[in-house]
Structure formats: structure tokens, C-alpha cells
Length: 411
Image (cartoon, rainbow, N blue to C red; front, side, top):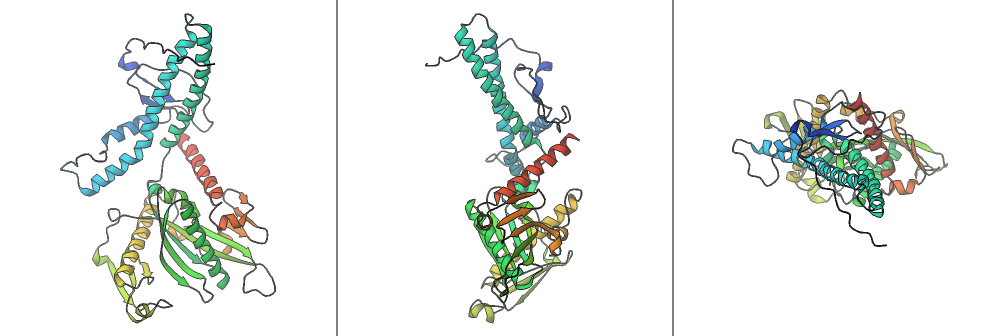
């Protein structure tokens, strides 16, 4: 049967401004200023962790968005390039929240009209029944929008939208550890390709068996650091090494560090704080690599942070890469200093390389991978190493982060 278009009930008389504030979502208990009469005063059961009235998040988000400089707007004369850049970033972060608020308001107005039709005794019976069906659908959609809005109001890590620098180092296990470090590095490269991200190798230090003692790379794309930040830690492998003739299973470890990439605006490097040394590259790489001082080592004197790059043939290219890595490390150190209550120092994040500090175990004989932080096991190790099933762990960790944020938000 062809459905007739429902007539919306006319809007009621103007409502005093003092009444133009209502709770936009019973999930998070936040208040949102409305420039229209109050909509339906329904109550949905909020999650246990959420306490109504604990925050005015949506109202604050609107105020913040109005203070930001929208992209393309004329830059105020008094604003520095750094201030303008920060304002643009803030505006982009708030765009999704503003869109959700608009959608929610629109849906609530729709619900108001449908409710008027359902309760209007003048309307035909079939018209009221059709309105009741649409009302149920609209209420469910309102709940979904409320939940999404609540999620956007949770505290966020400013670095989540940044690109990242990946560092992998062989730990306990000798040459087998270097082979596993190579496998892990390539796993993230494949995962990046599967997500449409750009993966660029910065530097690789090979072992005697062509594994990786150390390897680093940059990963660029939307929300890269936010997805990969929980990959930092010790990854343990249990398998029979290719060098093992008796078939015994060995246990080795690899440390992974994921650092948010810093812009020049974020980290200012002064020449007087840097010691730059050049030397001849070691290992294979062709004549020019081994006969010229192309390798670069940069020491940040105030912190003692050292970065050495020898991957490129050009000294200038190696220097540029080293500065990029140095900025990321210094930015991470500063983030940890400012957020010491919820972050660990970078050295603790990476760990010593000992097997006991594992966050994830890759058991090749049993074909499974287990993440010990969330207790999730995936039984296709091949898919994980190909970067196809890594989201099983990443999504579980992101969900755990969200639940922790909800608990903190409501306390």
C-alpha cells in the first residue's frame, strides 16, 4: 500500500527564552541551548556509568565552535600563524559534534510533529497508525544520535588525529627476535596499506640474518595515531626459528613504540640545543652511501635524546628524517609530562624488551594471537600478520578506552 505523506502539526506559540533550554540527551545528562520550543520530555534509561547533570558538554562545545576561526575565513590581523593554525584544528574537531547537534535537533522536531499527529483525535485512524510507526523509528534514531553525541563529548586525546611514527626494536631472543621485528614492521606496513594510509620507511638496521635490529617509519592518514597508539609495548612471539634444527619452540620479544608526529608549530628546535654529527653509513647501500658522510646523528642536548638516520644516500635527506623523528619524540615527552596522571613515560611505554612485559603474544604453533590487556584471542595468526585482522584487537582496545572515559566522565 502506498504510504501517504503525513502532515506535520503546526508549531506552537513562542516560548519564553527561559524555557528554551532542555536536556538534549538523557544519556550524558548534558544541556544544550535550543532556539526553538522545548521538544518531547521523554526519558530513556541512561547507562549506569552516566550520571545526569554532571557536565554541560554540548553547550560548551557550541561556545567553543563559535570562538573558532572557520576554514577559509579571513585571518584576524592580531592572530599569529600558530594561533590561526590551532583555531582551524579546533574548528575541524568540533565540526562533527555540531553536525550531530543539528541532526538531533531536527529529529526532535520531527518527533514533536509525529507525536502531535498520534495524539490528535481529529486525524483518521490509519493516519495515526502510520504516524505511530514513524514515531517509533524516529525515537530509535534519536537514541542513536544521543549516544553518538555523548561519545563526541567524552575527553579526547588531542593527538588522535595526527600521523604517527612507528619504531620497532628487537628485544630478547637474539637473531630470532630480529626476524620477528621484521615481521611486525611489515605487518604494520600491510595494515596501513589496507586502510589506505601512506607508509614510508625512515630507517632500517639489519641483523646478520637479514632481520631488523631496529626499524622506523612514518604512517600518514586520517586518525592514524588514534588507532595505533595502543600498539606500543612488548610483542612476544612463540615459534620454531628458521635457525632451529631440533624443532624446539623459542620465545622472543620485540618492542613497539607509536609516537604522534609533531609539527614545527608544536616543537620549536633551537640550533643551540642540537649537536649534529655526520659519519659514513654502515651496511649495504651502494658506493655513495659507504664512501661519503651521509649518515646523520642529532643529539638534543637539553633532554639527551639521540636520533641517528643512515637510510638515505643524501645527508640532507637523512637530516630531514632525523629532525622529524626528533620532533615526534620530544612532542611525546612533553605530552607525557603534561598528562602524567594518565600516561606513562616513553621508556616505560616501550619497556626493556623483556618477555614478561608483553602486551600481546603471537603463538605460531597454535595459530593464535592473544592481547593480554583486553583478553581477546584471534585464531588466525596468518590474517593478523597480513594486517587483515589487526582490527580485532584495535577495536577492542578503543572500546575499552571509551568505557574508561565514560567511567571517568561520570565519577
